[in-house]
Length: 153
Image (cartoon, rainbow, N blue to C red; front, side, top):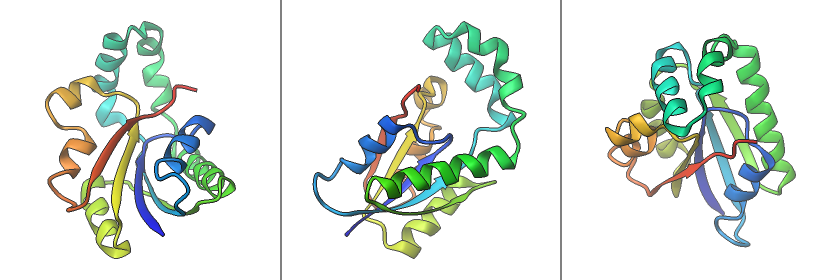
């Protein structure tokens, strides 16, 4: 069985589930999902990303969306785990409040993961300066790290 640690920041869409569950063809996959919703510390970066992508309407409402609490995050994680299981994968997960890369390294070691998949929206500012999760994880985890863009749906 192929073991993947999947880092996400929002609930997986149907397209996201299909993408990550078909990466290894017919091989059975087990996921450990680490979810860290983007919080207040990232508001400026999200606004810059939205401007770069031409999503000016999102910039105006960005502050409203960041008010979602742990209940929304927990529901999003449960939704994602349920959909991965319905697609035939094994899936467990947890919310990560702080230091997601430290937790990622620990989970990779604990589960003897084969790879890390970072599935997030584009973050152009962070990616340009190599401060995004995937760029940083490549130097910490000792397994291949794949960066994929989450569906907008």
